[in-house]
Amino acid sequence: MKITIQANSGEFSFECEASERILYAGLGQGLRLPYECATGTCGTCRGRVVEGSALVEWDEAPGYAKLKRAKGDVLMCQARPGGDCILRVPANLSPADPSSATLPRHRQGRIARAHRLVPDVIEIDVALSQPITFDAGQFVVLEVPGVRGGRAYLMVNYHRDSERVTLVIKQKPGGGFSDWLFGSDVVGAKIDLFGPLGAATFRPAEGRGILCIAGGSGIAGMLAILEHARCENYFREHEGHVYFGVRGLTDGFYLRELASHIAAAGGKLRVTLALSHEPAPSQVHPQFPDIRLATGMVTDVVSREMAGRYDGTVSFIAGPTPMVDEALRLLLRVARQPAAFVRYDKYT
Ligand SMILES: Cc1cc2nc3c(=O)[nH]c(=O)nc-3n(C[C@H](O)[C@H](O)[C@H](O)COP(=O)(O)OP(=O)(O)OC[C@H]3O[C@@H](n4cnc5c(N)ncnc54)[C@H](O)[C@@H]3O)c2cc1C
Ligand code: FES
Image (cartoon, rainbow, N blue to C red; front, side):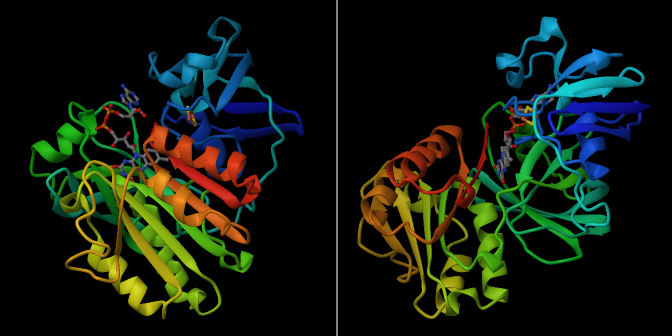
């Protein structure tokens, strides 16, 4: 089926199978359509059907809150074509390089390993049918039989042409994917994976200091960024600051990996575990003394410790929406950092 997009910057068209989501088909064919979550919650992928029809997959998607459905607005990440159709997308679009190795597409995968890091966080390795190349800080959307809709997860590992992705998932009580993952033995389960997606990526050529602010499993993409920075010897020239917010000392995970990145960075990387629900028992972690401890919400700790030190940095933020919104307020409004150097993923 032919999809035509009327954007502020001109008209673009691409093919979309009846079973495919319009956003995914467009991105996969190299059109930079607007999106953030790719899973129905943020509303960024708004398009208005002006001719033809689109079938809405998830009627109650929170992303519809700001859309005018009576006027034909759809979330392109939740809509499949009902035939050829024309959508108006109020954005300046540009085509991506169609030969780019990071254009997203569907791959089949199988859960090769599942490992509980702390009681409510599981790390999984997904072995892929075909290798994937992605930038540090990107995510994929997973779909599993029996759970309606897709779920977005950031890659923890970083390799070009990787035959596996490592993901880390925090349990959401009553959540569809959480119940499936935490409630059964999922090793061997088949998964559909679409990606890579996301623009909150580390670009070493920018040559700026790095500030990472993570809440809970938001640390996932930060580990990929640290891995890429390490491969590039990035911390020989630049500083890095990682603030990782968890509730209590025993909720911290990936501490061994973080300590190893600190050791490799020769004094240029500082990692702080911020405890929001209990006072820090000491200034450094009892088991990993290179990791500093602080008391308070992670954004409050950043505000206290980073004041006057933001210039020349690129910031990455990931985690629950209220934490990301507060970090954005701090960086954009208080510290007046340029939006181009503040990148985020909201777990809406
Ligand atoms: C860009 C991004 C990156 C993320 N990265 C991570 C990560 O690395 N680790 C992590 O733990 N979490 C991450 N999340 C959150 C994650 O995607 C899930 O929201 C979370 O794991 C809860 O999923 P659940 O199925 O347990 O909960 P649920 O409440 O069942 O579902 C949560 C989400 O699933 C989708 N959904 C639910 N029902 C439907 C339906 N009927 N049809 C279609 N879609 C539906 C919606 O997007 C909804 O917000 C990320 C989110 C985003 C947007
Ligand atoms: S990108 Fe479609 S709702 Fe977020």
